[in-house]
Length: 547
Image (cartoon, rainbow, N blue to C red; front, side, top):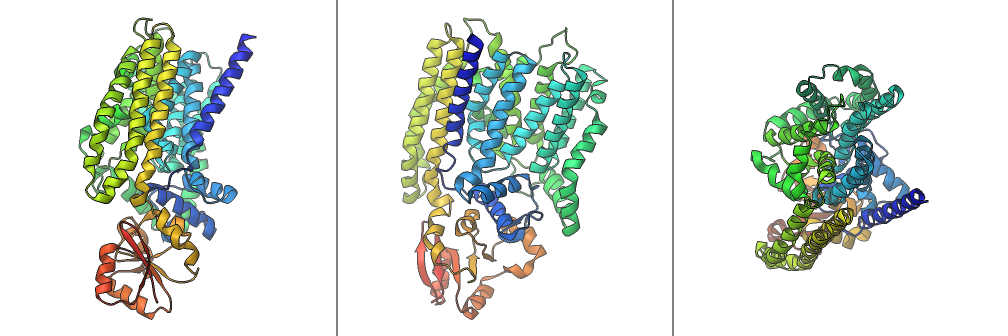
């Protein structure tokens, strides 16, 4: 009787969480650059029917493999082109990562540890935020983490040969999906983890047990068709993708994302909130060894965490979300630590951290206004301010509740802290829509979309807003601006106007035309008496048409 009730309660809880997790992904405008970029690539796949060669603003775009583009294009085809369908893949893979963490950690250690790990991951600030943003990092992170867990499950001492083989094949398939999500890190980082774990443990048979030849065959079977096909159609692909996007990205500052080596330390600390108190003890738990087992899953997870963190720390290209793949393993290690604490120790550290963050947040939120450089930005920060107050208050309430629940009701304390943190993260991300006024083209594009004839030239002059084409539902001709489209422009220069003089000539010759440009560019062209009628504008941009 008790077990069915627990299953029913668990199912209901999971259903409620799913509604909360997916329920907010339509609310916000797509924010540039990432959300607009990846939505537009998928939109162009649907519009053109070409699902082989990714294009951004009708120019070849080979920075990443196509799995997320395909998934989002499929969502657009099935459900229409919306903000929620643009974010659906990130939300789905983030949710999948949470479920896989619960299941895998429960099998590797015990069911209670699995549920704690799921609560920790779902409420960790970075995982919560990135799971609701249209970016490639959530997909690759979920697949990499699931592959690492699957490798651990395959090596369990109590796994049957058939079970081990299934988990092993599943791990290689997940690595293939990670590779199709973001490239060679999908195989390089797990392979390095296997080697380092083997050396540390001196378990020289470990590499043979993961069946590398069988696994690589499966991985190539899944990934090679697209890489071969796109290279045959686009001979320039291989050099750009493998050399420029992998070697040069890691070894040089070509992408202008250089940060100091310590950059990811504060990212990790903030991203693990409210579980910062369990971070170091969780890593320490990874050093523990069960002498009765040949394979040590906690040590394998520790190697994965340390390797990925150091790999991206020494890279010359850094973004906050690059370390996201380690968060499921960190959640498992933190849960392992939390499950081992005595009654007096339980969760007080995390409760104090959460409460302290809430108090500091309530104090510092008013200072956010001082970041505004203009009156317009000050107005935006004032719109965002109540959301930040709500987030800080939730952290504080969660910390206080967990503190009082910790000794007598430890699982309830974890639940209270996790719930408060999850809703706090939702407040942060939902309130961020205030910045859509300047960082999204949603409003300005929708104002004119119905007015623009389909075959009339539309120019982007001295600017490129990734979400503009998505909301306008058509591409534009770039003028005197390349940025990330430089590679595609070099392949098809006829689609580009290199300077303002060329644009002026094309504008004068066209019987009808539209253009998007920064306010300063509009002033310069107006001073030159270029014939144009202002249709609309926002804080940064002006849209004009030819009279």
